[in-house]
Image 1: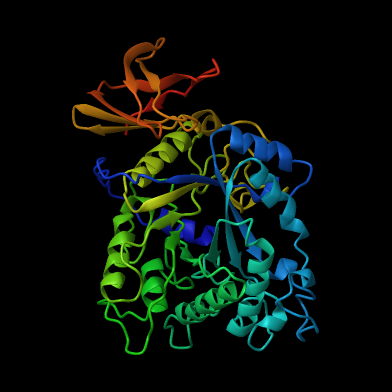
Image 2: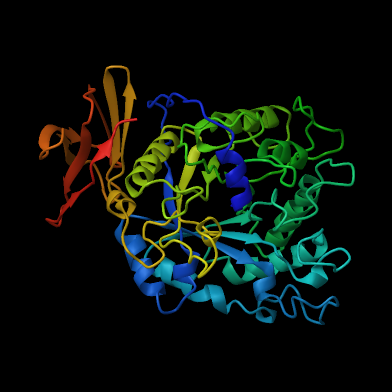
Length: 462
């Protein structure tokens, strides 16, 4: 997600949103990970995959950039080759990651996206403006033939409402242009996958970023445009239904926290996730997509220090991340939640601090590899939410293979004392309510079947 959008979000203010009811939590939510810096480097790949698998993650998102694998991507003239033949492409940068993840029992979500070969765009001016649906169909046929038996799901385009991935975002009259372009690419992808023999794997729609600006189409505006819906969700005549397998979204928030409510009704951060499911239901009622379309939160993270603009403390990063995961867990439509980055992006070596951290500091480790509090908290996320005189605790044993028990402890400034022992669900989740006491921290202790003990860091109530 671009930093400019995060900055726009950060200055908009915040209002608290009550957490959704717990009873209807999704029965099949998958936790995924994304760590491009670690996984594309042969020197760190195996250790990163081992660490990701070791904390209880069973799925990986991989972004496949069309221009990275295509021949002569900067040429204005298309080279002569069979675009549907997988042998014509260089898949080398992705093979070891996908094979290594599968060897560790992970599911793979492959997001196929721009930038694209220059020769595959209308006018060949750059690598993002109006990619040819015909060329993309052929490429997706090659992708499907190459990865069909190794990829569990396909998603079309990373943040297509962002100008660095798809253009133009707006036309000369500043009306959204990217949604219609994207719609053509989705249909092209479906045809390509069908011709590759993967008609049983409809792709995911969306992968949208959370907020609109003067250069970025807001996600719900983008959704309506893609589905030929007006502001009241009335579908244009002659605009067919998109038969997709789910809607993917990047519900990033700001340093204010996961309960932030962006004022624009067309923005969707984690704190206002029902906006997205409500929009999908209205679109389905208009006949534009299947009913009860599941939601995939395929990219998410909380940024920490040392970023001076967007980062929170290491402890708050872990606390906010757990609250966000609780929101996703409690939403029955969310079937996929994610962690973006194992290690932070590398900072620039010079320049003022405000400009050095132009990447993402959402990792569980610092850029140098030092563990953050979030790494310790990740296997046993614990969210503490205050409601008046009570605190609602929610947690998850990520490595649980069935019902298990955890000890919930508290500290008021000294050592930790036992609060209660809780039996988890078959999926490892648990809940407990206790009286609010100012200054308390909460943690859990879990003894795994192999005899090892894991302890979460102390978390504060919000």
